[in-house]
Image (cartoon, rainbow, N blue to C red):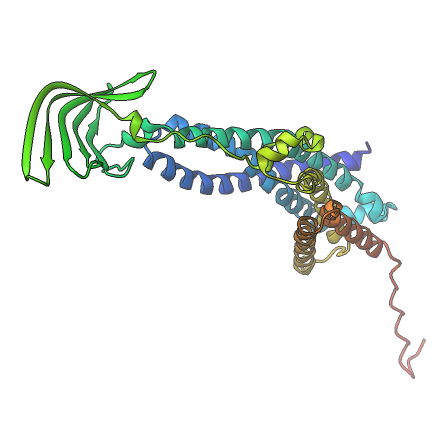
Length: 378
């Protein structure tokens, strides 16, 4: 690799890492805040939040890397132009096609990173995240052991726990069971412990009483107990996980088009092919955007007043590529046999890159010298 290629590529990679870190942090923190409120309000621990946050990170990186690559390409090329380094390279005989070669290397590196994410990490973490969410949804303990809040795990059941101690004891527990229209029973316990057995979790209450009220005869029966076991596992119906999201499958399973996977995801062969092709098109689109940022800035040349217009043009062209991605996805989803339409943004980006580099390297007219005024002396 030539010295100029190494120099520009190092600048691109450094700024790419910086912008990727900033954008990932912003996007990830926004998701983490909503995730934190959801999990903690459901009674989950901090470790569950950390695990869920880590599982969402690969998909966040997948979304952010193309933007970071484009921004880094625009920023580095604009800075090299402002410091006249590109002008020096042009004076030595470098064409725009030659100066864009480091951007091609850079785009290939970004595409390789995204290929690993889209084909390996993102499907694996999506599947694990869905499994974790399903387990939490069926976790009776997490749903019930929420202190200071009335919980309704089933119709006619109300549970209240004043405090959950660090040693696992529950203080001041109240359970109201109104499932039977002929009687309503309320349980009060000063202390309680949660125990597990083969049939599910059990709540063992100590030093309490049970009050049973019969609406028919308006009688209230009170029973004091030293300890009492209440089956809370029977309150929540355990559900089996049904279909899974097609995005949770690995690329190899998508390509295999196994009928069992088609039934498991309730998808068609065409949808499998569109998803598999999309995982290839996304990295290639990111590479085209990286080259687009450099190619657009090369059309500007050196200017003491900055290149704000050219930067704006590069943003508009990047939006055009994204619009092509949306159109390609819609075509591929609607029409059978058009799975290749997901490559439309790659084609549009490559065409724009070539046109911009051709425009940057076109011969420029030199303005003619003004004719000397009549009557002027030699």
